[in-house]
Amino acid sequence: MKHLIMIITALMLTTVACKSFAAGDPAVGQTKSMICSACHGADGNSSNGDYPSLAGQVPGYIAQQLANFKSGIRSNTIMGGMAQTLTEDDMANLDAWYSSQQPTIYTLAEDQLETAQLGETLYRGGYPPMQVPACMGCHGPTGAGIPPMFPRVAGQQAEYTETQLQAFKSEQRQSDIMSPIAYGLSLEQIRALALYLTALH
Image (cartoon, rainbow, N blue to C red):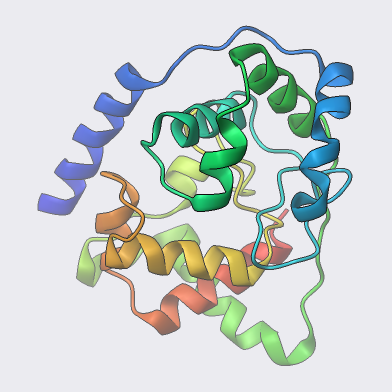
């Protein structure tokens, strides 16, 4: 119950703190995205588990994360440097481009299905023994996210999702919402959840 109250409070605070960006131009964003494509793919679908896929991300989320990288709220050596050169218009345009792209849908192998079933249980029902709420409460039944605060998590490379959840768990990546949730999950549960999300649609 304590974790649930902390999460609800964090949601309220996040709503207040979330910056509002003007609507961007996806065509301008596409031109600006050329430098991003080496890591995130030409259309925002990353082929490398070290980097997130951005295609189909909820409108407003990418612009907010870029602003967080620029201000230092979110720390990453590569992205911190990249974001320093971006204006708010650049961020809005990149956001518009990536959110308009079609995300890749992955198919799980037969030997991955059992693990993915555990991930589905966690995503849809949470983990009551550790007061972990259902992920779909914030990210939606299909993992498509809820603009602008709750990102799309479906179709992400499993390695990337697993790394981020572990970072939240250890508080290497800090979030008033995600850190207590990830803390309540075992490494096995995190791996199962990350695998399930790759094929969720």
